Length: 347
Ligand code: NAP
Ligand code: ZN
Figure 1 (cartoon, rainbow, N blue to C red):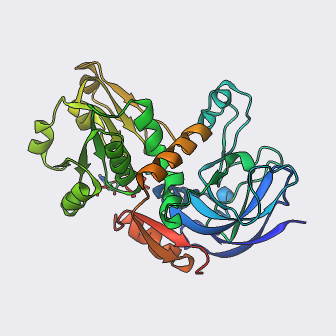
Figure 2 (figure 1 turned 60 degrees about the vertical axis):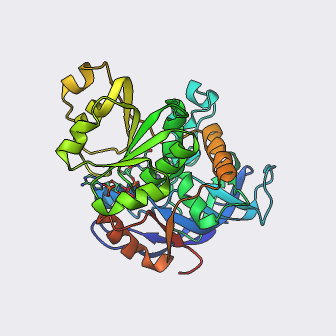
Figure 3 (figure 1 turned 135 degrees about the vertical axis):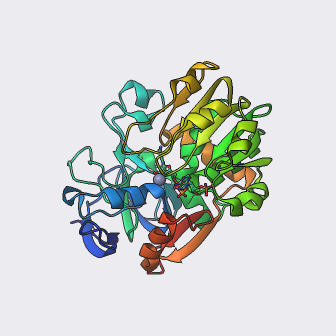
């Protein structure tokens, strides 16, 4: 017996998302069923919708959500029905490769299962995301919702949050480091909050003059208008780490030049085309260009604990699920401060 679910799906390339009835799998022993309450709208959802081919359809996006456990499998030990939980963009991994054993499940050598558009490890079906009434997920990839935090603001922590938290931690951001955050959107505004709470000096690179004041309110110490060549030249050579969250294809070289010697630029977007980089921007100062994605289970839990301790959630604009297409249209034109979250109970 499968579980009837209503999702918001892309049924044809270039179309709007529409309500679509489908079946989730029946619970396995280590599965939970979660009634989705809030689901964030990530720019990756927009990329997936824009890039979807006929073979990818129907596509139900959504990979950062919170909700309530409504049923548990026989072997589930950490949750009971009624628990408030959060789920991110990785929902399974092999558990036995070096990456999984090293708590880097996001780099599982047998490919981690993504929350939508992935392949279920046991039955081979395509995963469908959390722009939906219900989600079925393996217990191991479910987190307790921190009680003190606003649930709608926690949903974006599960993709945007951990995706910036993990590199900030990996590259040792903290007291004494100067961090640049490029792009003040869903990922970027959380990078500012986390880096500041970790004790770093934080500067925002933005293309939007209107975000200058907001950057400071979020905790940034300074703002650089990245379209201003003189301002960019003035910051050359002094950042210990830069995290680049720009969603559009762009040349990372100006940000490499802004790094101090031996420092790293971590670019989080996944453009369709290979990067074009000026080799001299890497050579001068022995700089590194890196990327990463998501976070493992330990890192995700650490991020949630830190967020709870410091009262960090995303700044969200909550919309009824039925306004999902409006959210996507506004996200495409950079009209969001700083994350849309769909209220899945207000359809
Ligand atoms: P978002 O909320 O739309 O923010 C992106 C920001 O990029 C915008 O707020 C804007 O900041 C800047 N921007 C947009 N268009 C630009 C352009 N043409 N030129 C320069 N800057 C531009 O997106 P998001 O959800 O934070 O996601 C950011 C990127 O990360 C997306 O490409 C997404 O797919 C990717 N992502 C990667 C992972 C991963 O695991 N690696 C996970 C999640 C998301 P300003 O207005 O301040 O300039
Ligand atoms: Zn995402």
